[in-house]
Length: 471
Image (cartoon, rainbow, N blue to C red; front, side, top):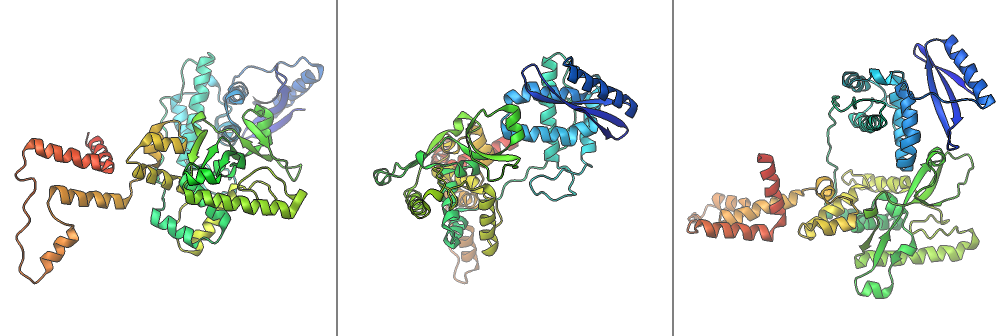
């Protein structure tokens, strides 16, 4: 059956048909009047009933995006990407410019569309507050989606050029994620009286885990034998993640990459929890455990074994490390709520749980002397540059130490505080310390500088960044 939907001054006939591959597809056809829409609705229903219906080729942007999703998205996107992209299309693109003919779309029109979006209220998702305007970041996501869609239109010879290539996109401010330093992290762990949360924090920090990887960890991928712990080679193996997926996306794109679907408690759920393959091959990795964290996992396994013995057949054993008391999966919102509670009750600096991954990567870069490839092996990034660009936070303490090293190596004296103390002292002032560089020739100074850079990778990274800015 088809239905008629009024949008502003126009009417759309919405119907579902079966394509040549046997998949169900939804189609929107825009008409200029209600009478025209009623006529077209009757025609479609008659053709569908008699089996002679042939869907029209893409004419408007809405028509094209339907084909783009069915031909490209279904075969390319992961379930979460499918949900996100189809939401952007149905919430923001189709209602505003869906009726525009493909031939009429220009860079100027797309630029105006992006500008108009800045005054549109965002469709709330996952508990977001109502009334907020679309963020510049969301507009940029729409831009990336349209850019890819029109690239396909050019390849399919539906358009001569991509109209969003030269469109102006609103600038989005980049906010650096706040992270805890090691002292704050240790303080938080000392105040945490929830063993479940404490284990999650320690694993996220020690192993640079994403939330889905943490909650999808199974005992079959954990080696915490006593021999492995004694020889400092205990490890976890990351080969899956826990993710909530909509049933609609599964129906559209199938179950590719799905390793296991957990049974739902209610049949009416529109989503399902699943263990899914990681997004990239580099996300599959082995991460070695510090001995203390390995011993925490040993205690966690003992707790689960006790629950199994106590509950018997009532315990649903899915082999999960972060299982509930009944054995079922733990979702991210439980960890996030417990983490926020720990922060609020103890007046700790406000961060999100994912910040622990940033803290982990930052300190691993620091402790490894800037060995990006080794750190990339733990984080699972596809590109080594992602480690430096997104996760290598510059710690204020390191910058202070670098300044002290400059003072010691180049200016020949103690800290500024020491200098100030000498200046304020009522005793007779001592002559200033001789400049250690005064009697060195250029070659010796160069050798000293290379020695300093070799001993301090943080200094090398800082000078490289400064050189790049000045250039």
